[in-house]
Image 1 (cartoon, one colour):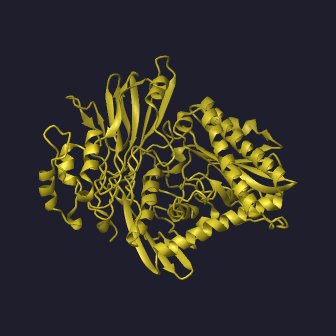
Image 2 (cartoon, one colour):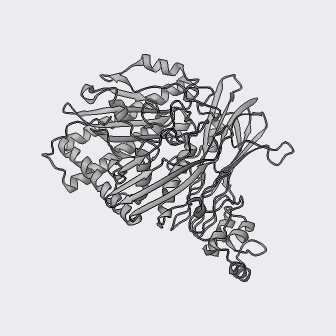
Image 3 (cartoon, one colour):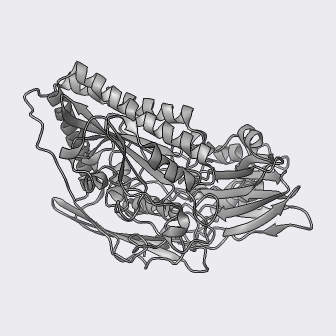
Length: 601
């Protein structure tokens, strides 16, 4: 339902200077809202890992400004379907986590959305929105996103769009119902208050802005900022994709139930004045929880990240999304599953989809980054010494794909989020961090190497802990570009280097470890860009000395032979080694999976 108010009168057109002031104020308000959640949330996944998102939307519900978080759909309009704009009042607050009811505006149930209408002079000027991943909302297992799930009911309580506050007064009864359905009510209560405080702060900052500029001028600024982003995105789209059809495909290894791989196939059709992005050839939905209910705004945002080209004067908003005129999705597919298919592990599919949009650019002959590796999630459940239950939901960073001008980013967890500090883990949970560093040789070799993954070893100090593991990119690692090689794969090993060593299923639940046992997690790296024999030997040497690349891999993958002490390059041997240059089509990674040229076919 596309609800819109009558256009705000534009008798006060926003001049260029005011436009830049308003743009800066919007970005500043967003950052202040983020800082509030970061400093007041209770759960580590929100407070430390930054698994949250805030944004401001115009009076129609279209995105004005938000963090670069291309997993979020169209979060305001689902509220309109239950609460028409003309019925909203100052002090209202709305809340939901219903994935299917919101048509993928939120894509798995732990993500809670809070929406605050912002009134100025008795009319809605904008909406403030906050979103955060809550640690537990009930379901079949603590953490609510088990690989064992087979329908969405097993993934926790579902909240349709509801009015959580009227005249600024929060409905405590409604909150009590929700908090009764979580295993950690105090944590959830604190996280809800942080999210509510953030949207109320956004309301105040927008009302402050309205004291400096006429309401009509602010509304006109919203339009101008969207038009500016659209113009830049359409120009870049035309430069990158001449008239024609472009295809790319990539796959998720498994669904946690023995099925897979599951392929996502995308086609971009470009005609004069029109661009259509079609996902209908993707595989059917999975029995397990890797399904990703894609809202059309998501692929638009993913493509916009490339089309805006990192220009900090442009906002990732609804205008940039208009560069793609139509999104086609097939009901019953992996990217548009039917109710009540499980969605809890959709992050694996989401990361593959994000990389695949860059694969389309490469298929068109453009120069975009190689594939990112999918981040690794593990959840530990058990009891402290005093008998209280703990839930440690952690995600580990991976390597991002190399770029046409630089190496990929090392050890990053999903764009703007962070790895848990070792000190925080040991303080909050009954574990000891025994190792934490770079996963050597995980980065995809190339003229520009991919980003490297992470190694973390944790020793269990509780009597017993039940682990859930989620690792993708083992059978289908992150692909390289233009001769760059694929990134390495991740794995989870218990008691490494001992007679009791065993490797865990990379996508499994119910893995029990007892006191003194050690879990070693290794995450994968991003794909490389360009032929690895074109990388400067001094850069390869620096990678060896800094622990990113082994001397064996330097010789095998990069053709760089080091001296006996490993401190310098043996130039004559390197020259001879590089004379035997493998052709691009002959490049394989250690697991034999070929580069992007084959994936795109």
